[in-house]
Length: 193
Image 1 (cartoon, rainbow, N blue to C red):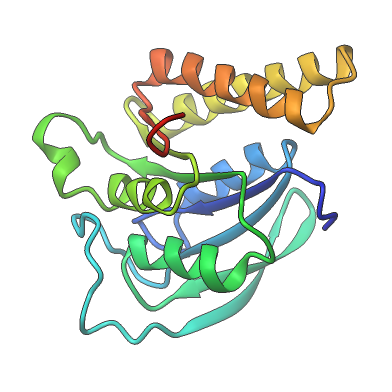
Image 2: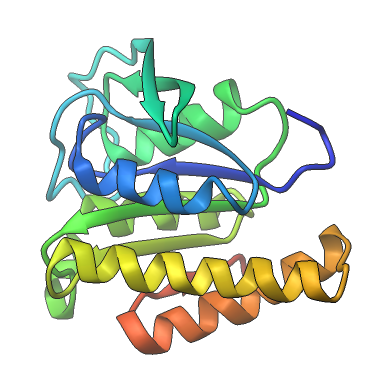
């Protein structure tokens, strides 16, 4: 990992072994360096809560994504705790973006108040890092295809115009805005941005 490379922290609430998490990792891998820190167990409906009975253990696992070996981190705690551990203990420098999901099922209406996926994105925003949460509104494959196409479009634009990292970040913000229109994927950022 290069320090100047775009840093993405990926988490979820469905647990480290969720297919949605690995679909997101595969799509985000083209955009920058992805670090995965997710709950060891399924932790839906935990909101932004920190579980007092969690053990906080961080277990490093090896998984293969895109024919590449990944070190991933299974955290004994809620999605919000996974993001906090990821930002404060695991990622070597402050990430540029935190993505949570792809969650199975929708999070809208009053559901967002207890969604672990939403809570994890809010945790990132509370630590001053843009948070993007994704859920599968239709079939998981459809959500992955839209996310992958959006990210691919961003990469195409950045390569075509030889954009530097700062410009890529601006493009990412636009890409995230467009994704939020298509997928109802709220973008959570720190105040004043």
